Structure formats: C-alpha cells, structure tokens
Amino acid sequence: MQVLEDPNRLFLSSPFVKHEVSPKALFNRRRGEYRFYEKYFRRAVMFTDLDSILRLASTVTSKFRGFAEPASHGKRDRGGIPQSRKTSWSRH
View: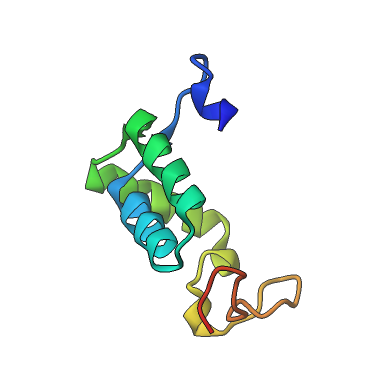
C-alpha cells in the first residue's frame, strides 16, 4: 500500500469502477483487497462526467475494436484466446 502514500501520485477513477470492484471484494471475503480499494477511493479524484466517460469509452473502443467487446459475447481476440474465459476472480 506504499504506492497509495506517495504524495506525488494522482489517482483517477469513476463511481462505476468503485461500484464494480468493492462489492466483489466484500462478497468474496477478501478484506485486504477491500481495504486497499477503500483507501484508494478515498484518495482518488472521482471522474463523474458521464458524457466525457462515454466519449472516451467510444474512442478507446474504436481503436481496439475486438478487445473492448464484453466477454459474454464469447468472441476471440486477435491472439486466439476466448474472451469468455473466466478470470481468476470470477465465481464458478
């Protein structure tokens, strides 16, 4: 957690990220991870301008077409790895 103590760092996030990761850590009883998120989000500048977030997401999506599609589509990225493959944090 030392990186969070560095006064020369600026952390950016959005409420979408906070509401995605914090409950997941609590649900999976990963208290250390949850504490990290709480500390991070207390320090982070929250980016709440929805129009700007969506505009940036569209820009990123257009640059990385196949990579930005949701994993539920089950498509393969350019490397041939199924995007629908579960991550290490997903529940089975």
